[in-house]
Image (cartoon, rainbow, N blue to C red; front, side):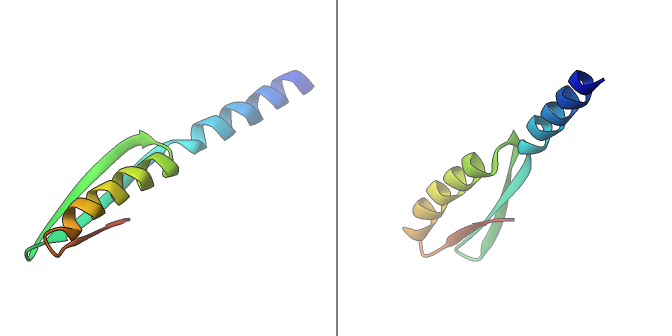
Length: 65
């Protein structure tokens, strides 16, 4: 029984690490959203920060929602 309980905790912990995140960018008055599906928050943050760097060249910005 203890093994099953421990396995259940591991499965829940791993499943909760990946979810959907949305990066919302506003550039030249246009707002665009991109969804990163089933990813970690760190990976989504890195991707959105990269998009923010590109948007900043045109006077825009991006943020993770």
